[in-house]
Length: 64
Image 1 (cartoon, one colour):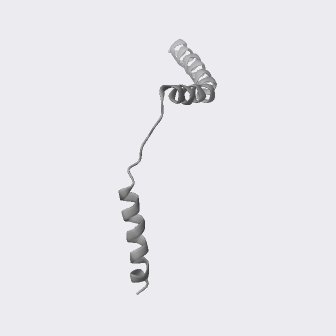
Image 2 (cartoon, helix red, strand yellow):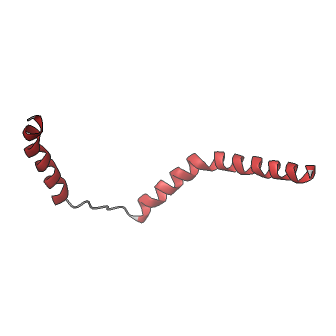
């Protein structure tokens, strides 16, 4: 009985969502800033990880 009360509202939300066509309007300038921001955030930890991985692999190679 409870489900029948919510059915019209659920259908309205579903049909409204399907009727709206999402438009992604992002230019090259915005994409550049997104990539720059990601590089600033992920660059230093990734660089440290690669350096530590190289040291580890060099150490493993010497121990063989």
